[in-house]
Length: 113
Length: 112
Image 1: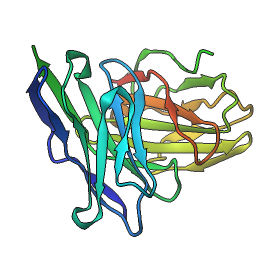
Image 2: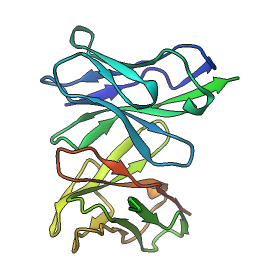
Image 3: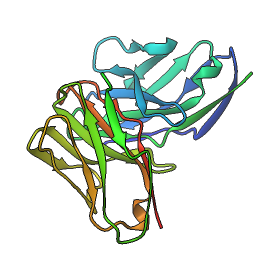
């Protein structure tokens, strides 16, 4: 069965520092992979998605993610974090249908000034 | 466009009460879905619909009913609320089954 693991429950970084959020997946074939962000009190917003092709995917708000099949990973990165990036981030993979998503438990990002 | 709207924003119920969580979208999206979000568990799919008149179960459907009589609306019904249904509920919609989902702001439900 498909599954998603986000090993880090909570991460704190300083504003301007680089960021990497980890995501590991279990999937039978080449997966579709998604990263969503949830700002406090808001719904989820799609940051980026991977279908196939180039393993480095660019998203909104300056985020990117790299698909590594050998490591079953799809880590999210940003070179310089802004205070407005403080939010919860979810990695997701489809299960039984493109939009039938299995979500990871999420990583809560705090940004220190 | 208002996007995906959900009402109410917050609700307190007593065990055994019933209620309907409303979800509407004005983007003419065919696909709609309901998720619940619990601490440490991410979001889990409750029910989904690929178009008016068509619904199906997701990962955690027990205790919830849905119907889709129009393209715009996808209400979620709790027939007899239980404390285990205390959660934050999100509705989402997509233009089609294989298009990006857009999420509503959520309904926070507390069952006492």
